[in-house]
Amino acid sequence: MAEARWLEVSLVVDGELAEALADLMARYVEGGVVVESGVRFDSIDDEGTPGGPVRVFGYIPVDNELETTRQKLESGLWHLAQITPLPQPVYRPIEDQDWMSAWKVNYHPIPVGTRILILPAWIEQDAGERIVVRIDPSMAFGTGTHPTTRLCLEFTEDLCQPGMDVIDIGCGSGILSIAALKLGARTAVAVDIDPLSVKATRENADANGIKTGLEIGEGSVDEVLAGGYAFSTAPLVLANILAPVLIRLIAAGMAQLVTPGGFLVLSGILEEQEPGVLQAARAAGLEYHARKQMGDWVSLALNKPK
Ligand code: SAH
Image (cartoon, rainbow, N blue to C red; front, side, top):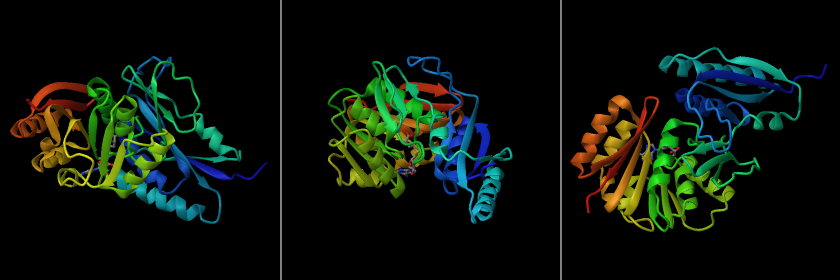
């Protein structure tokens, strides 16, 4: 029997845990982590039924470092399990050298809203009428599997008009800016406090053939307000972070980024955090426009009066 060349490690978790777990595993596996979506699609136009367990897996090379790597991974998992319960990882030796193709078939296209289709970078597929957004799922947060991203993308689809300027605070993989540009936005300013996100956004923009119209930088609300970018106000501002951070950013002037008559879309809000976020938004002069919900996650669209 051929010697095992890779050790597959996989855990089945709730969708909400998948990104944190994938981030952790990415440090120890080679070739990227796969998040096998808990969303079922029956056809290209099926918007998918979210929920259900998600399988997160990757491959560790079988070499002299294997045991050390495995122990580091186990220790990382132990730490994560202190925050939220985790199942034991399942290990499986893989003999096939062509493991890349083995795992790539497992990453599904993700239709979002009525017009967008998220595809992993390597898949060629007929998208029908849908606009394709290519994302490398092994990079920064924002692969399209997480409900907060999906909700924000749906609002982008609703609110982004051709020729519009967009500001994307906390761009992660760049998924929201890339989708906005593909929906016809003129320019997107995408910022993130994490330099890895800046890099991932640039790479994903390249993979989507976006050559102009995207300005990417390290920073947040302050840096955009300070005028370091193409514009410091826009009719559509997107921020998919987490409620406490959103509230802090509203206090730091995030509403000032929105032109009168424009929208601020906030995501990453748990249902019980919604009143607090709304209160902060109203105090900053914004009005409720619409909400979307998936599981416990809520996304809000707020309007700045003319
Ligand atoms: N926009 C992507 C990624 C969301 S994850 C999507 O919708 O899928 C949230 C991102 O916000 C992370 O990349 C994180 O680095 C960034 N972030 C966290 N706090 C921030 C802050 N105060 N200002 C700007 N970005 C922040």
